[in-house]
Image 1 (cartoon, one colour):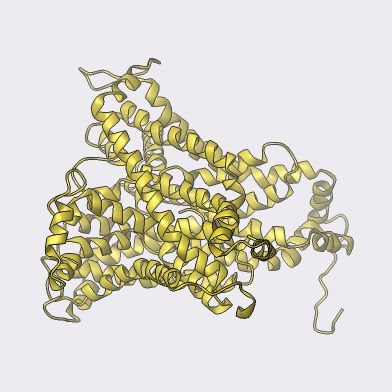
Image 2: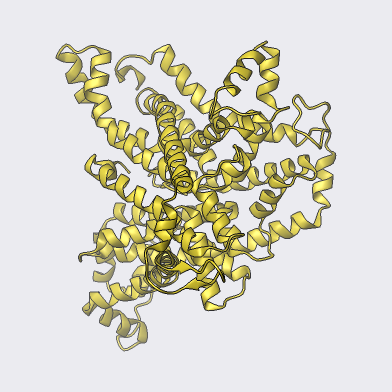
Length: 271
Length: 316
């Protein structure tokens, strides 16, 4: 009911809000535009001419496919680990009545609260000390560590809104703990799990800072892109890949939003 | 029970699931332990373990002759940290983080204010998605976008030429210290990109805190004779402040530790993250890298203590 709102927004406020939103989105539009540019050596604006050729070139590049494959693989495994650990942590903290609750919460937030470079170097030197060689798994360990918090946030928000009496009623009606989990708890948190999983996937798929320290020769897609940014070869190809990344991350985020839109518990705090 | 619902079988009392169930019910502590053990082991051993092992290196020193780490506790490394050049790096990074935080607060507030107080439910959903999408979309892609905008032959110089404002761009680039040869090799460029990348982290908490301001309070203020501006300054702003502080935690901390943005867009003068990276990599000086890493952690600890006093944690 708009009439109930006090006053009307001033023109200045409207313009400032709109300008802010434009500031967030216009640069992404340029990424898409440059994917069609015929100029490959500089970022000349406006592009001299437009072409669809770069999509074909990108399609034929083996290194891009390898990077995408590795990124998907890492993101899937990291998300699976984060789903298990994040749900367990949320379930435990939901019932936690002892001291140290704040410390435990801090522990799960810390991997995204501290700069990624510190997490990355710490893991790298730990691998070095333990004599672990770099592999897909060293990347997965880093990613899973900071993905736990996303799942945790979504699950604990859902648990806090569900009524504990429902779980008690299930037990009173003769279900054991496993049945209560399977038939009462799980359906309750399912969409939160899906949303948390999607966000964890997007987070892992996009991560670059920790990955630079925990990968050896392997290139995930962001690492590939970083090397293209530092030493550009065919610039429009990088743009084609960037368009692909935009599409791949937007879709899970939109789905996650619609899954949790009534509750607004897609806690996007921290990356 | 409705006709369509299938009954879930009740297992015999001596079956394993029911036995385990009974034990867990009788010992809630055991259940809690089983729940928390796996994530606690992962975060506590793998994460905290490596973190402390790395930071502990700041107490060791490096042998200047052999380049080997000397495992004896001393403050030598912190002594090396406090040279004029390193203090410069720290001051530069903290100043940048402050500038980015203030700018983001100024840009974010109108967006959050409009979305929280004037937007219809549909518009609110639009604003929410408009903020969430960039927040979760690729960090590198968004940094790359600014390379296109700020480059010498890029969009801003082109726009300046079309508007006959090249003299203005050159005047801005001519400002000592923050200027440079092009926007993408100046502090101005770094600052713009930092502001852009972290902006969503500022909008969300401000909007959350503004939405919690009771409408009755605003009405009461108007009833008592305060006009719009006074109500804003005396009622809304103080109540929104925890949200601003909460957002500033993110913008400040993320700027302190980032090394990719100033590496891609900025002058050659390094920030903390870049120094840590090169010390760890090419220089192989892990003790000094660890000592440098302690700096943002310390700065954030101080910052969080102040933020807690201002009630920022309730706004998260």
